[in-house]
Length: 604
Image 1 (cartoon, rainbow, N blue to C red):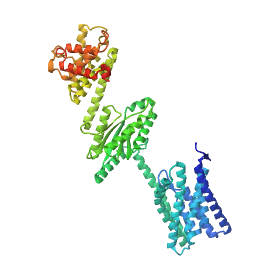
Image 2: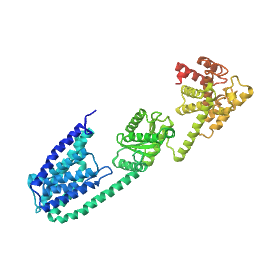
Image 3: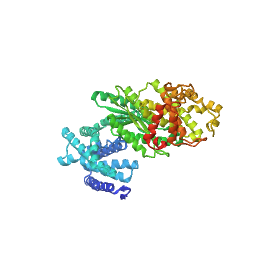
Image 4: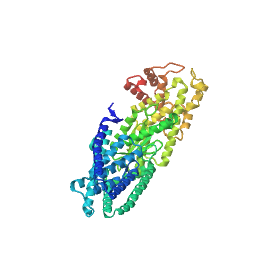
């Protein structure tokens, strides 16, 4: 642990002490000079007036924003230094700030440092007089030049000393603090120095004219406070209260600005739409404070990206605008996902996000089109496992109209419900706990061997999951029967393909529903429910039949033990041309041979 003195790091304490060691002799010398050569009553009254004005200025500083203020006391301190000498400016400056800090109950160390800094800066403001001699009121040009030079030196010394304290306390390189300090102080300096020149010239012309300065100073303070309140109100109207990011209104304005800038300058940019995966259970299970912490965390990570401007729409939806091409934006979002993966954001562990990315003008010609393409990419991410980023491509992502999207969301909700029903069917009988998952994977593997297209493979996976959904209507006594079924029970079982088809009808998953209906049809026409034969049976149904039979033979059942893969293949081959499509059986055999391992491992 670093050594501390009076609660401050030793280096910072040393810097404050050194500043005070310079200031205290200056203050003592100024008081001694005043005591040896007392001022006239008029000069004393004038200095007291300037001290009062400096004190009021320090007590009521001008707000620059909601975090910083600036005092116009330098107007009266620099004027005192030029007109009356440093011996009066030093105590005026030191006392005004020290009284202000005592009233505000600031720490002693801070009061000492700022009092010392004010004293040194006040002495430095008198350098033109020290170097070039005093001046009377008959030379307004020279007086103004003195004020401009004195004000510049005063500001420079002030910034140099304050930057030293900031750099030491924050462990930052001095040049990285002082250069921005000088640059940001330029605007305030320009205002202050002109007011100082005005104050000095008014005073030497007729002292009572200084009263006229009250109007501009009052107007400046009033304007700055009004402008600050307006800026705060405008910022709050465009800011999300929880995360501090821009809200939806700010996002829309920023997006329009980016579009205009890109069209004018030819600079591309990227839009990333972000959705927190499975966020509702976080609020429901752990409470809204935990959910709020998650949102704040995600907002910080999104906003910290390179060239990133992040927004929160409300709920668990975010957007990020990157001044980058789509691949660079993609890498930025992958970085955020990696960071989230190692943060225990909830008691259950990390949270994940899904992201859709599109760029302008590569993927869109307007703000509305850009949002639709990014939203389409986000929808793809959510539908393909979540916790991933999808870069928009017309060959991968379909863009839905609002009506189509609503229908697709409804369809997917119903489809999820259907899959849950299948899991419930499998769970009713321990011997078939993973039946549908194995049939799904095996049907896909047969499809690969047959060389079907990607869309058909997706359909085969889904059909394998849903083929037994009709069994939801069968009684447990039949599903769990520890024996072969009676003829009457078998007639009940034979109804499940039709019942399953009726459950899937209207979901828009053609041809899966037809495959489910016909997955018990036999190659020779002896199957059910319609007695279709040969190639009249849909290919998907023929594949599901073979996969279903193979899984049933290789799994334990209450009425018989499981057989190995060789025995199962032998049985399917023996019935090829009667029950099974011979081509499908041989595709299954090739898959098992290529896998060269037990089925469960081959499907993993």
